[in-house]
Length: 246
Ligand code: GLP
Image (cartoon, rainbow, N blue to C red; front, top):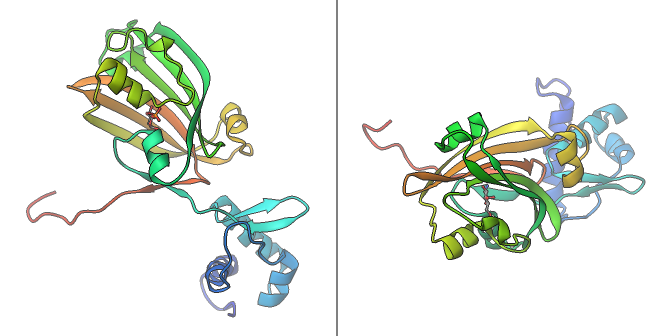
């Protein structure tokens, strides 16, 4: 388990790979402590600065977490997010977490030009604005901002959403079964207000998602969501290329 000083791979990257292997080999599990920076430095013959760089990297990747004054510990594995038209509630339950929602804001307002264009609505059409903090086993995971046309869901504002799935309300109360959607996901930096809600440090990385969901060709929801990048990763099945296909 030596670091190769002649390798073109930076020492902190080599240490990262060693540490990840070691965590598995040593049978460490979630919340177990990893050796201190001083100990790792002498074990691998590396400077404290290099070790710190490695730990910083593993913390940023969500593999380890630090508790000030206590040490560094193995983090929980990230939650895999499928690329599918599923609800937060379904995704969390499928992974053994208890989903939750806290209402941050709800109102009806005229759709701005951009929102209206994206939803295929005449500008100024009334839309429900729903802002929720989504939790898994009580831990904040995402901030979701949804826009839903009032024309397809009159009275939606009277349904409490805490502890209830929006998609199941759409289905059970309005008979809307989403049948298609599209989603864009990009890396981002959490804005300070969302960071506070999500319990993240300023400048933390997030996954910014924009989803449009449709039923019978009509846009039912435009959602702008901010997911913690330290707790989520995207997962997608890959099908083989079909001969002659693109
Ligand atoms: C996902 C989508 C959101 C959608 C939500 C509905 O998280 N990104 O656009 O609003 O699911 O979830 P639920 O039915 O649990 O409220």
